[in-house]
Length: 323
Image (cartoon, rainbow, N blue to C red; front, side):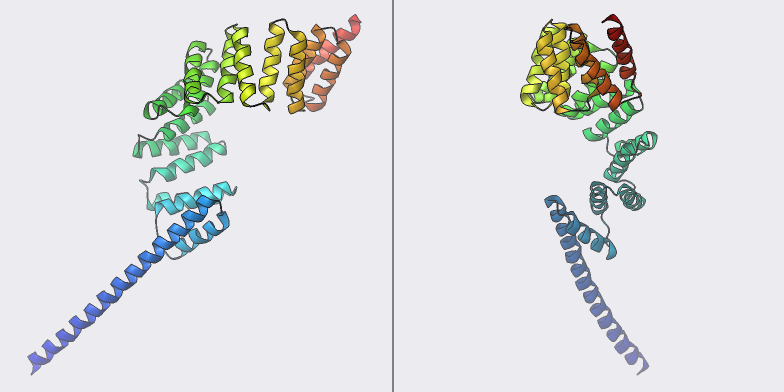
């Protein structure tokens, strides 16, 4: 009798365990459905630009105890887009604690730190991302930008070249590589980089503008004029291009056209100190001394501490004493 009772109890226990397993399985399935639904709704609303609704679903996902590195990364991006960078960093630090091998979290941390001017910390984070996943062009590109900020230009070149090696169509890498080479007066390399950028995107106004700057440095004013005019034709509201064209036209002994172009730069950007300085030089050159003095006054009003303004002020007194 005793043995029989034991067997009955065992039978009952087994039945109870089966019920518990079945219930747990149903709950697990239900949780997975809810988890996937919250992720889908959060991502969909985020992609549509409905940040408020997306955030509601991100928060609900986390409050339910669900975990997913993409949710943390995307929620952090949302916070960053909403100018809540410290909140984004908190989320990402939690994410890297749970998922230390998720490169995207380290990359976003680096991006935030770089925007805050914490370049050494940003370098540390992006290098973590690269160590985890070394074949992402954007990671090497961002490391290149950090090295540019740190003025470690040789390493910036290496990182940008690595980004291009991984993704030969990354136009931003060519643009920045051109800028680094220009800083180092490597004008041949700069020209090669910017022409590759133009080949990738013939309608890049900044690429044509930078090519014109290279031609100016090389003393090729006619080619510079052609390139900067191309930039203006693509982007008619480009004050820096009009100012640069003014300098080129003055060099080509076309002072009246230079004046018109520089005035256009000022029309587009009323506080453009460098354009007022260049306009003052042009006006002095063509004998409009009083108007040149007005340019100096404008510079000193916009930027009283300006070296350009101080230099122009000295020229102003020279004009007055000679008149």
